[in-house]
Amino acid sequence: MSKKTMAKKDQHKHPSRHQPHQDDDQRIKLSETMIAGLDGSEQELHHSSERLDDRLETGSRQRKRLKKKIYESELERLQSDLVKMQYWVKATGFRIIVVFEGRDAAGKGGTIKRLTEPMNPRGCRVVALGTPSDQQKTQWYFQRYVEHFPSAGEIVVFDRSWYNRAGVERVMGFCSEEQVEQFLDDCPRFEQMLVNSGILLLKYWFSVSDTEQEVRFQSRIDDPTRRWKLSPMDLEARNRWVEFSKAKDAMFAHTNIPEAPWFTVEADDKRRARLNCLRHVLSKVPWKDMTPAAITLPDRPQQGAYTRPPMNEQFFVPNAYPYD
Image (cartoon, one colour):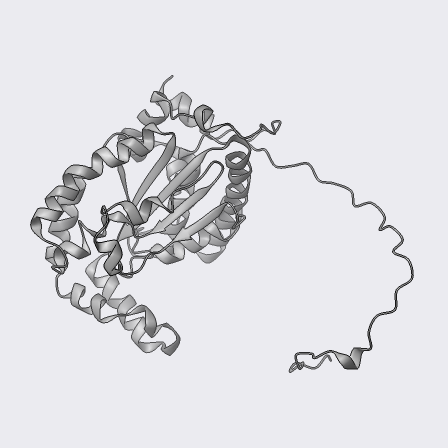
């Protein structure tokens, strides 16, 4: 099947019957065609579903933000499709891991929020691990991430991931060069194992310019409610821009594998970055619209006689906003 045919197939949204979950030994395997569709080559540059060019503002797309009206309209449509996709994921037992990496203030958190907010949190969860404990430091490096991997019918989103070792840990000196080299050697095989087990692994790198990052840092400083987003580590990383660039380039060179390629999201415009990423996720999952049919609520049955306790025996939260 050609890439064009595969891309067309990924977009179909016609209702279909629900299918039961598959047993562990019968889970959906990623076909060679699906893996080939992840290669990030010509399709990523020219496929019409990856671009919004015909609806973007005129002028420089690098500097002007996408108009709010277009953004909100597209976001509503894409989030509706994400809900449909999740119905399919649950019905078929499909498993998805989405990794978000990138520089500080690149817009990962905002995109993750728009990706996950319309979906059922029981089947879509975000993993954002903190600093490893002393016990975790003695474990196999990937171990604390593996325990969060999806079961059948689940989507797991990593807000930063095992790639900390190739990025911040390397640049900030939290690990040795030997550990980094071991990671870069192990990671491709580790991810190939995930894909071979039937997990769809999507990896996104959010790229932001130093100028735009500076604007966002200053915005966090100016807003007391957002200062928590700017840590001393962020400021130190800001001083090591080139070192992070070198680390990222080395990481890509070792871990950009056919089974799980890296996809770069240009993120100077947050609105475009969010929409482009959501569209891309939808294009990589071979979902069908399996939304359940609407039901008709039956009449509520008679409940019988029951006397409620007096209202003055309950504590109520005061209403601070009187009705007009």
